[in-house]
Length: 287
Length: 336
Image 1 (cartoon, helix red, strand yellow):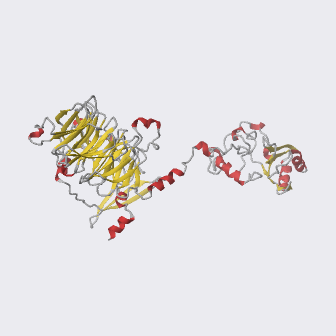
Image 2: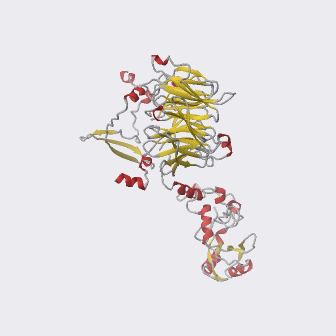
Image 3: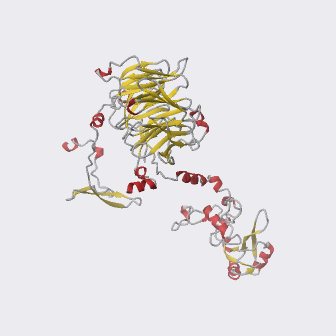
């Protein structure tokens, strides 16, 4: 009972074994008058860090005018009457740090700072950006893409086609890069979960090839002719620009038989067509 | 440099004053209280309550025993600095725009407004420290009437020899402090643009004026010759000479009535630092949201405070770069 008596509250009891508890701070007085303070804390990666500080205490004596010293002991009066010693929060606060460096050519420096236009608003920065689909590079949002159920997003490296690398970099900024958000079920190591809504009616895109680096002047019929040599082609899609009606540089070819598709992929990869070397690979399943 | 923000006032600041030791700071504003602050940490020591109108001006005696205030309620009040009690009230026919103790602390001058048929005056009152400050003379010992252009600000020159006054028409005059005779009048600033502030150097042999004509001038108290001119791009409300370093600090900004139509940056609500001798602008300190109505400097030159139309007093203790700054010629002089 006596033990409980001198304790403020049983809730303050700290005698439990917490593995994450930090060792108590140690203070060691050294011979040369300094103190060594050893303390522990958790850093940002929640690892335990030992902090050793050596502190030297020096007493600075300040001589003030006796009148000033006498005034320091004056009691408060007026609206402050009866208030505790020390600045009160409602009348006194500390402002943000101001860098004040006097300089001879202050005027010239200030003029230069004025000249540099401040960074424009977000709207201005994004003025030249266009919406770009990550699947077919069309000018619509990825969610609105007509092929979102069948095709996987075009990866950065493989998408380098007629459109050039500069634009690819811009596309990366829109979220196709490796730093973009990956849903939990698609992350590495996660079990492939979630049945697709389409179920068994889903299109068989195991036999679909993706062809990139297709000439702008390509025609769907020509592309079909090229691939029909290897087997029955069920569908040819040649992506076109909505406005100019020119080919965008990639196409999808669906075969009836996967072995035909595999053969076509092998033979046509690297095939020269309209002065460009085709790149052919199996289309990835859209997830 | 981290400023200390003092927010004890509800309305715009009119004047701030450090005492002679620099440990206390007094501020008055358009609300009816006088605040006393510790300049080191911004703690409020107390308030002096009793005025019935906006307080235009404050001054503390050189020994930090008495405090004088002048107000729009047509009174000058004398306060006991330590206790906050009002020890004397002098009534005037019009508002009091400026009070100042002479360097000895034995006399107090009060500048009264020209209004309701009364001419502007500079009135000198004798101050008595004996017997718990009770026997103060009722009648002024001297009254100078400004019949041409009213005085807006005034102060005492070295050894209380002259009274220097700044006028509404931009001129500066020198009166004999004993007889009240006008010795000299110089049109120091542009005509019809009033002088808003006069503050003296520590030895009171010269002073700085701040005027609506966007300039501040360093003027000799002896013959009123203009020694230096500091040109700014905005009307100036206050100017002060810094001890220890040869700088002057000017405060001003767009007139208060135009403030709402301008952004904080355009309004130029900054304290401007000029080199006292070379007249160059060497830097600015930002922070206020309104024009600076008053600036004051610590008598040892280690800090300055500014009071703005925004109701804040900002106390800045200078850091090393302020003291280290030197012109090349100054450095050479140091080496010799």
